[in-house]
Length: 108
Image 1 (cartoon, one colour):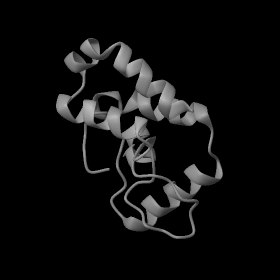
Image 2 (image 1 turned 135 degrees about the vertical axis):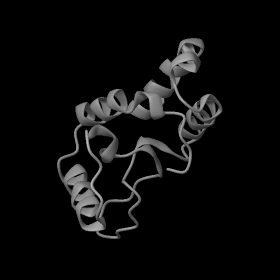
Image 3 (image 1 turned 90 degrees about the vertical axis):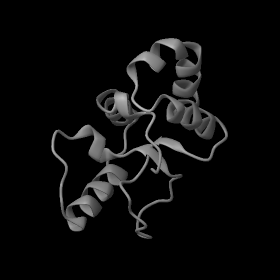
């Protein structure tokens, strides 16, 4: 539900976001992908770990909510696990706000 509501909000205020978000063309493509159910705004950080609950590919990841990026795969997997175990809608909103300028990035 958060994905759809956020996508509709972005569409309704698109001209503003086109001025503020990097990769403007990617923003529109991501909005359409989220509305079509092919992507989610926040997904796992590049993990194909089968132990995690399934999610569509994310535009952002829990890493986008951090001030520093971990360099090793084990830490990224642990962050994905913590994200899945402690999921809250508020956490997704926080990640989207912190990674706002990156909402146009492509490639998950």
